[in-house]
Amino acid sequence: MKLHEYQAKDILGKSGIRIPNGQLITTAEQITKVTKIINGPPWVIKAQVHAGGRGKGGGVRVAHYPYEVVTAAEDILGKRLVTPQTGKNGVAVNQVLIEEGVEIDREYYLSMIVDRSTAKPTMIFSPAGGMEIEEVAQESPELILKQHVDPEAGWMPYQGRNLVYKLDPPLSPAPARQLMAVMANIYRIFVTLDCSLVEINPLAITKEGKVMALDAKITIDDNALFRQKELLQLDDPKEKDPLESMAEKYRLNYIRLDGNIGAMVNGAGLAMATMDVIKLAGAEPANFLDVGGGASEEMITKGVEIILKDRRVKAILINIFGGILRCDVLARGVVAAAKKTNIRLPLIVRLEGTNVKEGRKILRDSELKFLVAKDLAEAAELVAKQISRKG
Image 1: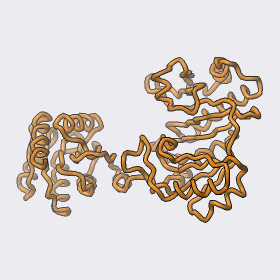
Image 2 (image 1 turned 90 degrees about the vertical axis):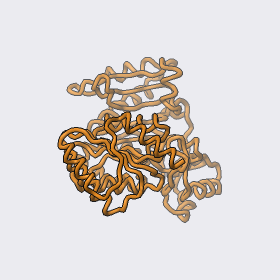
Image 3 (image 1 turned 60 degrees about the vertical axis):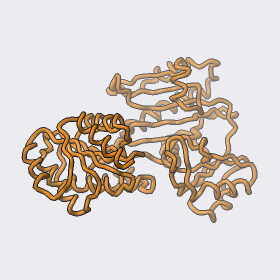
């Protein structure tokens, strides 16, 4: 579960990390009042959306006069913001954060993640703050500093020193101590709130020598939300694709993509392979839909309904390897969805595994028109034929 910047900063602030004074607005009428509350000039106006690269899309502005704050905020609020992470359609901006400007002396990048290669929490620190960390890692890997953390021991003071003392030029003692304190707090937040990511970029040292988080991202592990019920109140449904929200209600793993072939699969690995098959056929997947091993007939039915709600879908590929999810259960779910939604799109089905004969019989005995693929290669051929006909 992703948090907005203002929500992440609120958590940081309550943990003792300095953040700029700011105010969230949701209507144009609030803008003028904010300029009287928040110190300025300058002021920074930021779109609050679950997407990175906001500055590149015009979602971050700096204003030096009150009227510029009003103009910038009105221009952002209620509009669709297109960034490198949103796709061409962009996302709607429903709220804007207006903050006091800060005189920056130095900028850093700081984050806490789980390093899958070591299966340990890992602190990432870089003097290249304010930049895309992926670009820094690719172009200047020597600027990426890491400290792996033993979960049983927790964050140790020497690890902060290992990172801070590698800076060139070195920091003076006061900001160095503040920076190490921020690192300790970041680790505490990461563990206590069951985060998969805590990121500050940039983490600035101001002209006054204060360490301050100018931007922040926090992502909570969905699997741990049963322990973080208070954080559930911070979830913003407006930031989610409606079909993804619908899928969540039925415990389906669904991600909407930009293609035209709907896919239903059980298992993440098989789903990735199926998307490769679709692309090899010259088409593009419209979604990632993993119904999982324990899917019920109702879940299958809802999965098909969700795929059909995407008007870009020109054909549906169902690729199921029956194990825990039996093929007959899948077939009954597909037939139920067909009767409920009146499927008119080409349907390609590849079934293997538990009760595959029963599943195929259920599909054959239905009035549903479908094509059967005996393996992935044939599924690709059938997808290609459907695409050429539609083209």
